[in-house]
Length: 183
Length: 127
Image 1 (cartoon, each protein chain N blue to C red):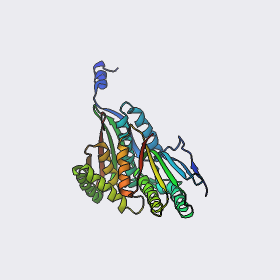
Image 2: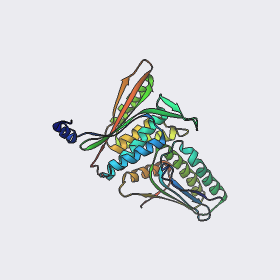
Image 3: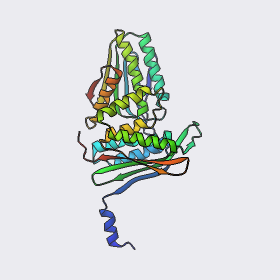
Image 4: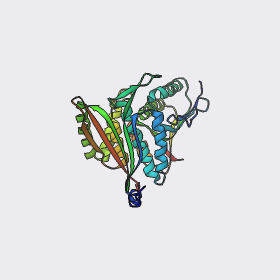
């Protein structure tokens, strides 16, 4: 029997988990979640567009760079594993990803996030152009996705390194998108 | 030259729709583009443009109607702009139009960035 008071508390909560996923970041699966994301956020069209762009960047970072991965049978390519969560807050949406990184990469990522958070919009645009130019192929490293997340959201990104063992850590990153964002 | 046509499909919406037509000189990329390994998809398009600009001397129009594109796609688009820039610098006529959704004003910033990086004029138009 549900306690009616508890039920009210549930419905009055200011935070709701809209999507949570843990496992391999297959593109087809990410597309399905992306459709849900668009559906859940259609009341805020500009926030919806920003959120989708950031969602793709962050989840493809996990897919491309997570140290925990599986190999796809058909194409023999690695598919990174991790966690993704979309949360609905009173005035913002939060998109969070978590994945395994090497301990030494965790520190580099941390420093890069620090720089990205303290950089101006113009500097970030310049950095994005430099990263694109300096990448010989289509692998840019995770940094360009994080730069994009900050540029698109206009908010600092939250990041956290959770020590796992001597060799690996868990890298957690959250981008916050304002619902009533105006241009 | 062979016409390239790729239709968008609801089952894999991360691939854009493509029409590259040498007879009219009009090329169009539309929809969303966030596939993995973007080069595999864009390589034939980049090669097509190379061939066109080497063999033909007519006007070429590139219409981009992308609602969303990932970082890997940006690199491929820049490669296309580079080819078109060379073609234009050789005295040929090139027109690049970027159509954007008025509900996505961030796209104008993106296009301005492309213009700056590729050093080529891109006309921004509303859908």
